[in-house]
Amino acid sequence: MKSLIDILDLSVNEIDNLIDTANDIIANPEKYAHKCQGKKLATLFFEPSTRTRLSFEAAMYELGGNVLGFSEAQSSSSSKGESVADTVKVVGYYADIIAMRHPKEGAPLVASYNAGVPVINAGDGGHNHPTQTLTDLLTIKREKGRLDNLTVGFCGDLKFGRTVHSLIGALSRYENVKIVLVSPKELTVPEYIKKEVLEAKNIEFIETTDLESAMPDLDILYMTRVQRERFFNEQDYIRLKDSYILTPEKLEIAKNDLCILHPLPRVNEIKVAVDKDSRAKYFEQAKNGKYIRMALILKLLEVE
Image: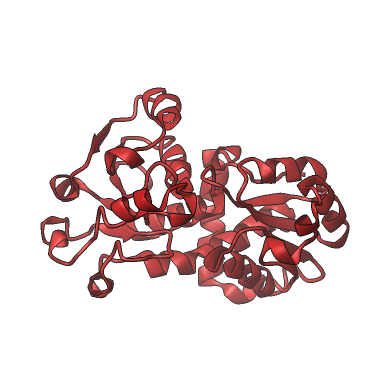
């Protein structure tokens, strides 16, 4: 029985197969409509979510399965002090697979040791968000036709952005990927990502505070919001929240085939006017999340 806690739990071959399956689901949805009949997904969301939770639920329903779960910690027994291990041990008797989001880093890993069914990490604190990474990779592959030979810019909160950490880890395994890290000094990517991923794999990367200077070289621009919920200090959040705002004017110097991604929710870091630009792919990206999660559920439940 396999779980997905970290994107690096999957080999490059497994990721490529998931992308192929997702593309087949997009092309032939009727072929997959009953694949999970009689199966149940439990969504255990101890932290708020719109896209991730609903896309998991939509994914299971479109595979013909059923869904049970909760969308906030207050509506679970954790509000009474129950441990994650005890919660998932019980839920494992009711469901065939669990998707779990938790504010504590490592909680889904603990869950995977105790559940008795596959556990999918749907985000743990500032640490990991592997199904968002799969969504990102599917979107890049669909838009660019490749996952190698790319210059990828990450902009905004690179310190707490778990989607950034996961995607850098995944892209580091493909050939000739260059990384551009754009952030305020207070929100730079953690040292362990630089040392254990970028430097350890000889990935070419630069750090800058200036988005405009980096823009002309980028094939992918991955924008992120500055996350209020990760700050201990409201003043720091207010000071940094508008560090980078993407506007149509800033895109004038970008490549014609730039692909603009954002894990969403957007606050004000991408102006609504950018949505009309054919290079804006973040809503397409959200749609792709459902298909890659369908592929992952099939894989972990070992459905042919």
